[in-house]
Figure: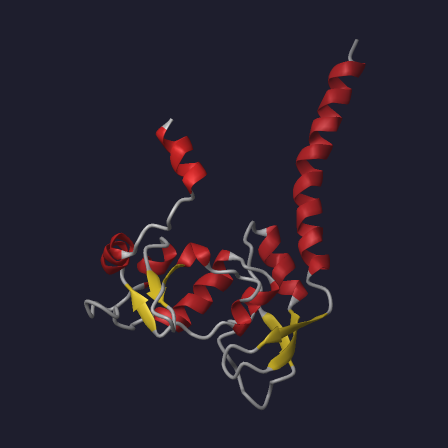
Length: 182
């Protein structure tokens, strides 16, 4: 009579404790070893080792944070902003760290307004690449971001939207135009 409720209780408790524990241990073990990255400062190859204990402690507290324990460029380059971590894992903290280096305090290429962290934290900006094509933050491939040059022409949200409206819409094929009319 009491066996079924007790069984359900223990299964539920195991799931409630086991899932976060499994996720935390996964964080610890996935950060094992050295990783090859491209240094954002000088665009040369480097090997970094993630501080696994720090990542584990952050995961226990429900945060997805990491930091570099060692780097082949240290101590020659000294302490750095650790923007290369986005190549290891594109966590919100790593993305913010890189975008802060790229955009903080820089003026919009069109209107001159200084960019603030709220611009990139809310995805409210873009930039013009070397061919003056509009690139939105959501279009960035974070796996290849280490080899990507630092954007030189950032745009605030207002100018980004105006530039987006000014760009021609890609031409549709004849088949898709007929399907759109039907």
